Length: 484
Image (cartoon, rainbow, N blue to C red):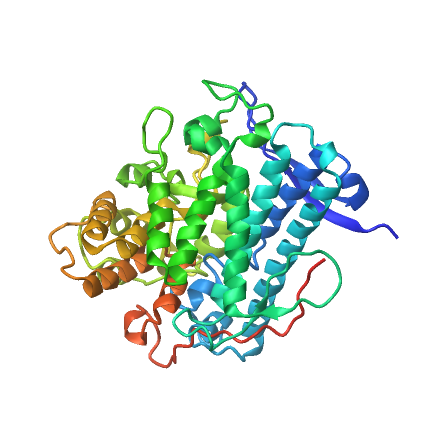
């Protein structure tokens, strides 16, 4: 029997015409594997399917962005007896908690399996890829995203980096098909992450358009100076790319305590320039929030496009499911410190009224602007995966102290925070950086990993309930790896 591969094909064809639709969505289809990989378009569709898998609510479409990963650090107000309350209490043995983390584990490996299927067919059917550098593009994206997915697996289910011998060992899966996957040591897992990243970087560097062209040019193919042979080479921040690899290297090196390497990678992204010398990735400012770009998409080195963001916001935020505080005090004082100037404090949260009359504050990060325009320039429906603000915080922590302070000042200036209380020593700087992870990446999932990386005590985790016993070591999920 022929194997079937379910692909939800999304053709992101951004039209430079009078057409009112700039995103064409093709229906879900079942395509035999042999037919799918018999054409270049088939490979592109298969890779699109990988990114769609990544938006599944078990992972980056919810639980590894604003869902369970944020409940671990009590980002949301909870009702008694809910699974969110149990997660915030670190009750990993509760049945519904087990089900959620089994789901994230399975979906991560399922997405990796789809990547491995593409990679295996890529070698045997390379001849069908006729467009220059299409083979290198698809292979590099697959390797880079495989590393991204595995790295989040080890960060979530593996040990704390300060105590690598205490925690689960995981499998780094590089093949598609049935069979047992060996659980390897923490150090071996690390080596495989960086091998995939190095291989992806080597493939990307000679041709990735994001190196040469500005983010604006990449959003507008076949205008200006950017005329790609295939528009699949456009919209690079919506998929893994050269600078996403460098950003992930920075994140991973910092996790493993390799500060010099983390700083080198982060600073390369920060210092990236367009052909005219302009900075490629700029920190967002209050002007972005005024334009209702609450996700700061201009900061996205890599973000997942989510066409259903309106539904997401309505279901989870507009409904009050993910909410924080009934008065402005919780946000302004407790989270942001009553600066009176911080743009996040002033503009990132909204007071909503539920059908029962209750009022709550919800974050606006996933509230998309209602559009009738045809341009992607003001389409902010993206799930942030890697942002330039994180590179500034990594550089601030990983650079020599005096240099790190300068990066921290630049970050604070962009957020309109006073520069009066500049940290005077490294421990103080690191403490301030950790607080910024909490404020900056609210509803993105990165704060939990920062707390785990530093083994932050309970007293440093804002909003953690009194009854909670902090436990960063999640148990091994009770499901088998899906590798096909």
